[in-house]
Image (cartoon, rainbow, N blue to C red; front, side):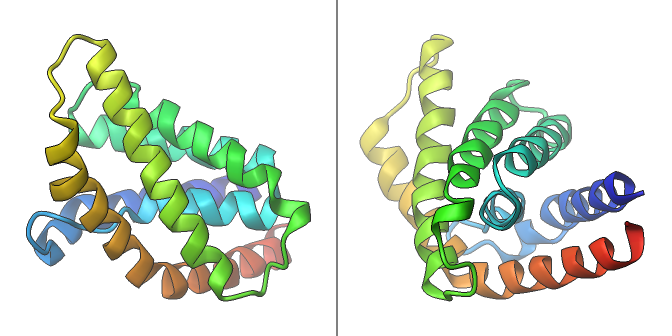
Length: 164
């Protein structure tokens, strides 16, 4: 039952990210709510939850985006694993933690994705990607991470209480 609730949460997030967030884009940059959920999942519940959330979120994002299949899946699984390793080492109620974590996760996710694109033989203009995509995405994610992380933490506590 708990897995079903998590799946529904991720599916709803994919829908919001695909349908509504393009309307909130600022100079082409928009927040990556799925990345925020993957990082939050890893920080709050450990590497297994981070990897599982990363896999499912990345898979659905790949299916919804129509880009090279597997890019988001691999990047989000790696990010979920890395931030899941920090689960026992951090004070989870610290407000600065999700902001710093999402900045690092956004950078890591973008670098992993662009590296795989370059490995597939596509030309990647790294300086332009940093200036026009990576830095604006990091900034936008940092702006929205606290309310999304807090909402995610509350929703998962509710799900845990009623689905155990």
